[in-house]
Amino acid sequence: MTHGSTHDDAGVAAAAPASSSLPSRGVDVLPPVARTELERIRRRWSELPAREAATAAPALREAVEAIAGRSAAAALPDLGPAVLSDQLAVVVWDAYASGHGDGVADALTGLRRALP
Image 1 (cartoon, rainbow, N blue to C red):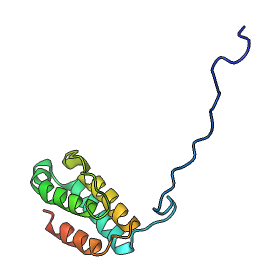
Image 2 (cartoon, rainbow, N blue to C red):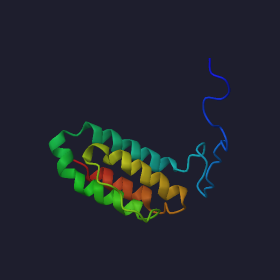
Image 3 (cartoon, rainbow, N blue to C red):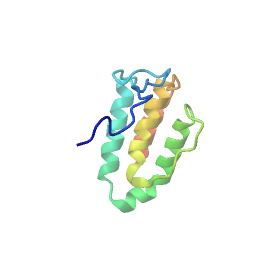
Image 4 (cartoon, helix red, strand yellow):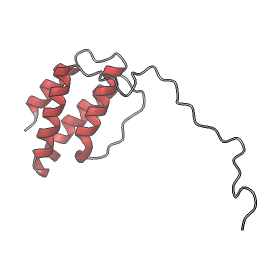
C-alpha cells in the first residue's frame, strides 16, 4: 500500500486559453458564396484522378499560398496534393477571420473553374 501522493501536483492548474483576436470556434466567418466554392473545390479535388491532381496541384498550391499571405507571415509546408484542398479551407477561414477576405470568394470561383 502506498501512503500519500504518488505524484507531485504542486503548481498544477488548469491552463488558461490564449487570448485571440480571432472569432471563437462557434462563429462561422465564411460568407455563403465562399463556403459553397470551397465545398465545390474540395469535392472536385477529391474526384480527380491522381495524374490530373498532380498536374493541377501547382495552381492550387499557388492559390493556397496567395490566400495564406493575407493573414499569415509564416510559409505553409508543402504537404502534397492530397491535403491541398484542406490547406485551402484553413487559409480561407484564416483570411476571413482576420478581416482580409476581400476578393477571396472571387478567387475561389476562378480556381474552381480552372480545375480539370
